[in-house]
Structures are given as structure tokens and as C-alpha cells.
Length: 340
Image 1 (cartoon, rainbow, N blue to C red):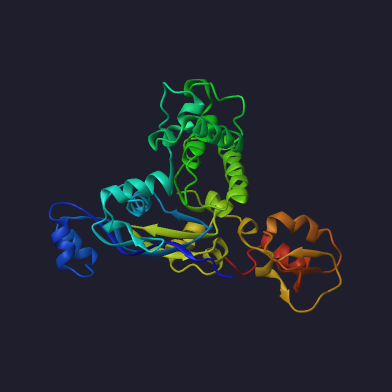
Image 2: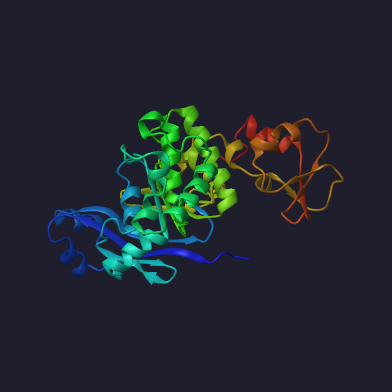
């Protein structure tokens, strides 16, 4: 069953410069030349997307592509110049300030690259700060705070101050603080980019563990395609304020919409992106051991290559949908497999 749409944006624009609102009101779909002639900067240009409930939706692009501006428009941390942002059917761009305060307090969680922890508060006090703002009874807030601190693996650090924590631990506090109010949607803007590579990998693992338990609707911003591949259900690639393509990681590799998308994915090892279903031969059971169609090639390559003959491929219900052998995997590991 297809998941319902949680968040949509329709024809969203963010223009910077004098008289930007007047310009967009009088130009239905301005092109780059018209925007430049008006002396404006098109940070987000006619963005359209639908984010499903419970999915990890990654928005990525190089610096200056508009990805962070778009996510701030989606959460209305900045005002879009035009368009609609529909959250459970409500257009956030037309919501009152009071309505937006309620949305942010109760339905939205946010984590940014810079942790923005309050240095004079302990870990527990930082985590429950959103509940304090909501005037939640203190004992209830403390109990909830301890729950999410345990969830992110910071047991025993409740009384430490931010300066006494590592970068990865501080980011965990930021994540716990964003989850304490049990948001419906979670915005993360390059939350791990300031961390060392090893800690970053650990935080990605932690993030996936949390998502497996919480099933949040997540909008995740990154410029790192390998990170996107690890985390994303679907990816939107942006360039010059425009959304170029929205697809699964596998679809981006197999069917890039433009040369830009192709170049963006060129250096990513195909085994980390392609699933068994992309390489399998459809048909009947081959009577060999079974592997899942959704498994990434990198996860099962050793098993397939070390097996004589073909292996059965099964879907999520355990039904056989095809087979795969070592030759198919070798084409990805040691050649381009006709996919580059």
C-alpha cells in the first residue's frame, strides 16, 4: 500500500532582491534571463515535490544549489516568494504566525549542522527545553527527556554540559532535543557534515537505528552522495535553485535525467547503490539459497560470488521473483556492467 503524502510543495519560488514579490506576481514562470534582468537571485525556482509519510527524503546538491533555502521554505523559517507548502493538507505559507508557532512546537523537529546547544544548560536541560517552552509539567518533561536521551545512547551524560561532550555527543543532544516533542516531520540540514569521518559514519548508523524504531517522515539535506545513498528512500537533486530529478538512489544511477545527474553519481561504487532486483533474471525458483530483492549488491556480493550456480531472489513477502548468479555481480564489481 502506498504511503500517504505528508508534505508537498507546489511551484515554490524564493527570489532575493528589490521588488521580488512584485516581480513574481507579474511573471507567471520567469526564465533565468528575466530573473537576471530584474536584478534578482533565484535561490529556489519553481520547486515541486511530494514527501511520503515515513520516508527519508534527501535533498542534495552542491553549495549554492538552493537545497538549504528550499528546506527553510518548507519549514517556513524563511518566507517563500510564491507557491504552496502543504503539510497534512494545510498550506503553511498562508498559516498565521500563531499557527506556525504551534506547528513548530508540536509537529516539526529540526537539526542543523551547528548544534546550537545552550552552554549554560546540562544535557537533560537542553533536551527538555522545547517542552519547557510548551509549559509541560516538569516531571513529565524530565521523564520524556530521559527517554530520548536513552534513545540516542547518552545514558549517564544527563548532567554534563555541552563543553564536556565530544562533537558526536553534542550532535546526539541536538537530535534528542528535536525528538523530545515527538514531531510528525523531522528536518535535518547537513547535521553530520561538521563531524570527523568516523564519527559521521557512526551518526549515520545511529540515525538509521532511530528511524527503524520511530518511522519518522524525514527531510534530510546533504551534499554527500554516499551519505544520501546510505540514508535515502528517495533523493531530489538540485542545481541553480531548480530540482533536476527526484528518484531512488538506484534510479538516479541507472536512469539519470541529465548529464549533471550522471556526473553527480559517476564516482559512486555501483555495488553500494544497485539492488539485487536490478541485476536479477526474472523467472522461476532456481532451487538455490534465497536472498532479498531489496538487498544492496555490496551487502550480498560475497555470498553470491562464493556460491556455485544461481541464488533465488525473493520479495518482501518471501515470494520468488527471479535469480542471480556470480556473473551478474562480477559485472558490477569488476566492470561497468553496461551501467556507467
